[in-house]
Amino acid sequence: MDLWNSFNPLFSVSGFFVGLLVGITGVGGGSLMTPLLVLFFGVHPVTAVGTDLLYAAITKTAGTAVHGRNKTVDWRVVGRLAAGSLPAAAVTLWLISGIDRKSVAAVGTITMALGYMLILTSVLLLFRRRIIEKIGDIRRTKKSVDPATVGILTIVLGLTIGILVTLTSVGAGALGVTVLLALYPSLAVREIVGSDIVHAVPLTFVAGVGYWVIGEVDWMLLASLLLGSIPGIVIGSHISPRLSERFVSVMLAVTLALVGSKLVFA
Image 1: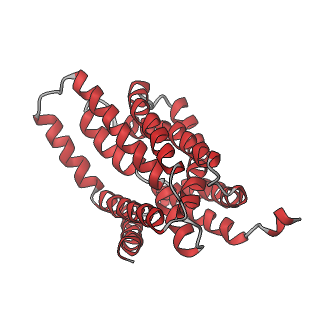
Image 2 (image 1 turned 30 degrees about the vertical axis):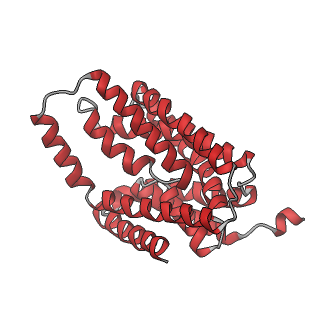
C-alpha cells in the first residue's frame, strides 16, 4: 500500500513526453529527464542523476539491440571508449561517495555541471549539421592520424565522457558523437552513432549501480518514468519521419539552453 501511495502519475506523464522527444530527435533522455526532475519536481540533484543513469541504461538497451542487429557498431571504438569511461566512472563514484551529498557545495557543483552540459548539448544540437559538414571538409583535406594516437585520444574521450556522465548523466551523445566523427573518418555516421549508443549502456549501467550502492536511486521514481517513457519512445520513433527534424531540434536546443542557463545562473 505504501509503495502504491508513493506512485506519482505525473512522473509517468513526464516520462512519456521525454520518451516522445527522445524517439523523435534521438537526443539522450538525460538531457531532458534530469533537469526536469530537479527543476520541476524538486528531486535532489544527486538522486535525479543516479535514477536517470539507470533509466538511460534500460532505455538505451533496445537501441543497442537494433544497432547490433543492423551491424552498425564498431566494437573497437566501443572498447576504447569503455577503457576510459568505466574506470573514470568508478573513480568519480568513489569521490562522490566520500562527500556530504546533501551539502550546499555538492548540490551546487552538480547543478552547475548539469547546467553547462545542457548548454553545450544545445549548441551542438543547433549547429550539428554545420559541425558535421566542417569535420567532413577537414577530414577530406588532412592526412590520416596515426592509429595509435587515435586509440589514445579515444580512450581520453571515454575518460572525459565517463566523468561528465557520472556527474550529470549528460554528455555521451552530445560530446561523444561529435569527437568520434573527427577521429574516425572512415566510419559512417550511423556506425559512429551506433557505437556511441552501445558504449552508453555499460557506462550508464555501471554508474547507475554505483549510485544505487551509495543510496541515491529512487526505484519507484525509476519505475514511474519507465512506465511512461517506453511507449513514448516507441511512438516518437514512428512519427519522427513525418516531422521536420530541424524544427524539433531547434525547439529542443532552445529549451535546453534556457534550462541550462537557469541552472547555471540561478
